[in-house]
Amino acid sequence: MARLQSDRFPLKAPLLAGLGVAAALIAGVAALTWLAGGPAPTVSASTDINGQPAVLASAEIEGGHGDGPVPFSNAQTEDVSLPGVRDTADALSTQESANASRPAEPVAPPAPLEGFYENGPGGPLPVISASGVRPDQAYAMDFDGAADIPTVSIIVGGLGLSENLTARAIEELPAEVTLSFAPYADNLQTWINRARADGHEVLLELPMEPFDYPNNDPGPHTLLVEASPTENSRRLTWLLSRTAGYVGVANYLGARLGAAEGPLTEVFTALEDRGLSIFHDGAGRRAILNQAGHLARARLTLADRVVDSDPTPRAIDGRLLELEALALQNGTALGSGFAYPATVDTVAAWAEGLEGRGYQLAPASFLMQIRNPVEASSPAPTEANGAATEHADPHGDTH
Image (cartoon, rainbow, N blue to C red; front, side):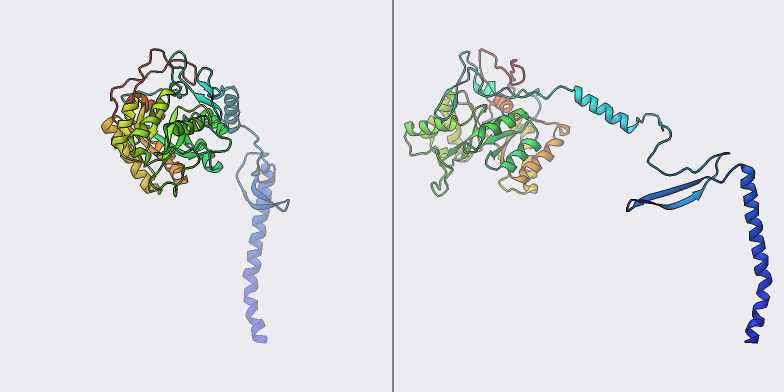
């Protein structure tokens, strides 16, 4: 024990010397602080923990005479200005003012338009006006496009039956995409009004007999091969009077009717008599479809591709690229699809870069006017302002 105690004594002298140096340094700092006129400023960061501020870190910084603590806080003591950069609050205020003064987006006029309908069994039936203007002209959305630019049109159908899918298609797809509605939808006119107000052109779907009917039944009032002309006319009248505001019709199924020239010609003739365009996905025999359209003198065009026969994003992308190639080759290309989530998402993403690739996405009526121009003596009113809209026809009818 005596040896251990004797070993500690040599440490006392340096320890005391170190303490003395430290004391001298402290006294020197205090003197300098007093001479400088106050304590050195500090910067501190704090956070609120359970409602109580707690200092996280602090550090001394050099400052001028009389400077006090400079805390990190949300309060700004003075404005900070950088060249070309506006204060965030000013920017938001300016944006709000711009939104407040911006005129409302144009809304399509209520359907049916006066002079373009007669009373039918379920509602208004489209008719050609007394001046010779057709419903497919009157309800066409105004589109400021050029007929010499490769043009792609997309029709997305099956709408009105699923609230979520219908709302998604209306809101997420570009206005240039034409939307096709099932005749059996609840609140059908409400959906069509909503789509038209959002800038979309709309079509009405006609259920047509498939080869495996009635095992595969498109629904009530399906147009049938074996039905009499009177019966098919009655069914067609019921379907067309379900709503108003559409530029034309699209088929739903119908491969068997599409292979029967006689009954199909009768249907096409009735549609042409009412001034409606016919958009067909090609189900059936294309030669017979075209022949029936020719005999009926109908405004008929067939889709070049069904974009989602394989409803996967990769396959849909491939079909859309095929439409681009066809538009580059022929001037126009028409694709049809169903409102699958993958179809809506893929078409919306594809359309974003279409203009940059040298194409234009156009409503179906614009493509129809290029392929089958209306030789009308009177100009057609547009949805936006009632002015005439005429499109050139450098390509002719490719179908």
